[in-house]
Amino acid sequence: MRPQLGPELRERLYASAQRAATAGEPDREVLSALRASGLLATAVPRDHGGAGGDAADVNRVVAEIAAANPSVAIIAFQHFAVSARIAEWGSAEQKARLLPGLADGSVLAASSWSENGAGAAKQHLSSTGVRRPEGGWVLSGAKTFTTGAAVADLYLVLVRTGADGSGGEAAYGAAGQTFFLVGADNPGLVPDLGLDLAGMRGSATGLVTLDGCVVADADRLGPEGYAASIIAGVRESGASLGAVSVGIAEAAFDLAVSHARGRGLLALPTVRHRLVGLATRLEAARATVERAGARTAPDPGLATLHSKLHATAAAEEICLDVARMLGSAGYGAGGGADRLLADARGVGLMGPTNDLCRELVALSWTD
Ligand SMILES: Cc1cc2nc3c(=O)[nH]c(=O)nc-3n(C[C@H](O)[C@H](O)[C@H](O)COP(=O)(O)OP(=O)(O)OC[C@H]3O[C@@H](n4cnc5c(N)ncnc54)[C@H](O)[C@@H]3O)c2cc1C
Image (tube, rainbow, N blue to C red; front, side, top):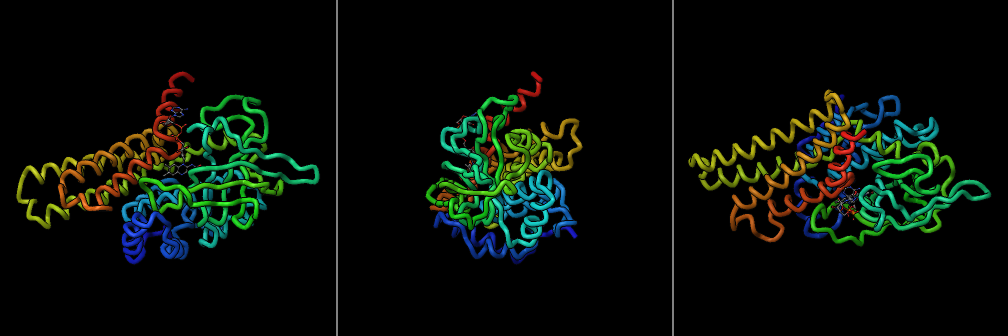
């Protein structure tokens, strides 16, 4: 059966969104409810205890969560992305060891790729993975912008294991980079929630220090130096952060409708038509994300990039229009429309950032 977001969890996610935005901290109770909900099984294959969902399922679940709580939606998105990468690239031992926990919610996963100075395309990583003579690897460096930091149990960490530029070129990631799966119980991995973001304030997006972090070779995901190829395959999957934007835009639109209804404004054709304009833009954003998830476009990778670009822009515009429609009523500190607008901006900054998406689309014309 396909995982569904039930009304009780939706209500809890919704109530927690405002609290977490004010506190600037993740809501651990609501994350426990998410773990227990069965939703985290979405991207895990059935033969490893999961729901066997495809990109369309991932996008649907992420959009549903985002409509109630965008911060939790990006935590879930990263969990689904790591689950899918393990299902795709993991060894038989890694799949048997990790996927059942990722499916039943006892293991929550995060992605730790970004670093200060690495660039949005992660081509200049300073963090390293060095083979130890006695076996295994030692990972060192400072990661930033890890969603789910300090609440995740498993981190997909990207480090440099060889010389940049050796073994071919990549537009996102670089040759000589390798992925490792690191458990939160590894004493060499130190998460820190020290980032004070403008939006997505309940997403536990923080820093991760790799301080002489020792891992086994069995913790390497995919071949050594091969991370850029794994990254290139991600967008082919059709899972799109645009789904988060669709959920945010839906929440903003609902806010506008209930505001107009509550004040008797639906009697005015200008208000009704303005709302229809928002609904049309929301519908178009939803359609691009559904097309990405369905993988029916001639080039599913390009459709995924376009879906992120279109849905993030639409969500930002819809949130801004709704904030304007609400007038002073929407201007209170932490008011729904402004919070949603800050969250909507955050999606465009997530990897691949929108500028990098544009670059990747443009590259397809020169290949
Ligand atoms: C809310 C949030 C959650 C995040 N979660 C995660 C996470 O879970 N894991 C993780 O690893 N990272 C995460 N990130 C980091 C994100 O993936 C980016 O890598 C990071 O924000 C750095 O991007 P930048 O725009 O600051 O990069 P910079 O390189 O400083 O870019 C500066 C500007 O130049 C543009 N630019 C940079 N390089 C290129 C290029 N090659 N082509 C075109 N334009 C370019 C950028 O888009 C940006 O406009 C998150 C970020 C945010 C805001």
